Length: 118
Image 1 (cartoon, one colour):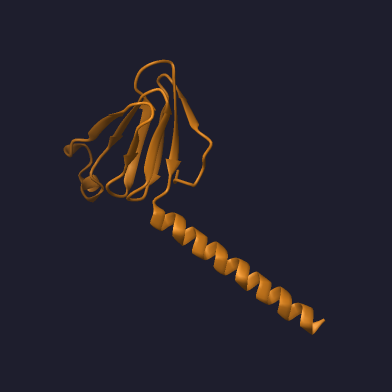
Image 2: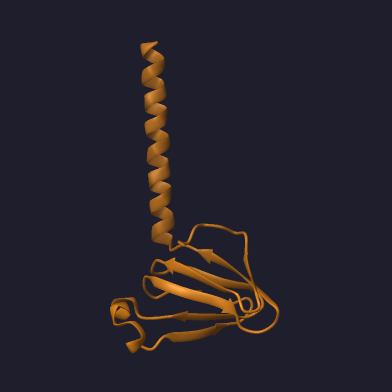
């Protein structure tokens, strides 16, 4: 799964794990309960289990910014339920806005050109 700009929290029940492939500088915000994050250094992922994973507990209300691209597993640290929001890196969000803006301008140009031809 990839990160998308979404303000709707993703919910996790006890024992449930969410895996997300995130770009560098993406944010994970704990909005309900505590989260357990686990990831490996992306540049060493080819070594598999030979490289220890990093484990972080994210308390409710805290935000973690990913230092590099990679897969992060997210689970409820304590309690029956936890919720989080993923926010893409600013560069990714700005890139998506540029592409969307360019597409809108191109569509308007095509519409105007076709309107003149008709």
